[in-house]
Amino acid sequence: MASRLFIVMLILPSLLSAQKSFHDFTVKDINGFDYKLSQFQGKKVLVVNTASKCGLTPQYEDLEKLYREYQDKGFVIVGFPSNDFAGQEPGTNEEIAIFCSTKYEVSFPMMSKIKVKGEGIHPVYHWLTKASENGVEDSRVSWNFQKYMIDEQGALVGHVPPRKKPHCREIMEWLGES
Image 1 (tube, helix red, strand yellow):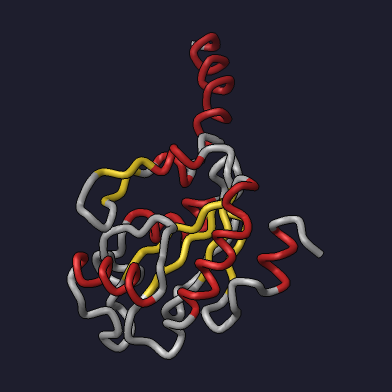
Image 2 (tube, one colour):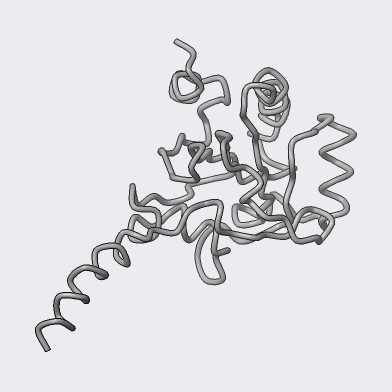
């Protein structure tokens, strides 16, 4: 009995610290294909919930600029369209893809439209918003274009509110700029 207890005491801490990482998820891309987020191991990732008919939609331009500036330095942006705020992303995945490529020349990866809050929240956003899952913080997606920073190991670093632009101080410092 004592030997079993000893083994449990050795194993339990490693089981409890086996926190799920951003890299553990597979999502659907904008074309409906499986997309393993593990391909971003070793890169900083900015996760953004997007919408095409929002007052903040022009942030697509700033996001694309940031992506082009830093993609060669181990950085990627991943967009997750969502219709959770005032019906501001009513389009289909195909319509969203056309809008992003023609209006803003978006070249960073875009995923399929998902729920980022409430009932039916996508597992990635459940992880992003629950400290019990991400090990860092509880948060609430307050509007379109909220930004989550993920480090090279797939751990959540923190988030930036929607109204702050992609080149804000928090994101630039995280990218190593002062």
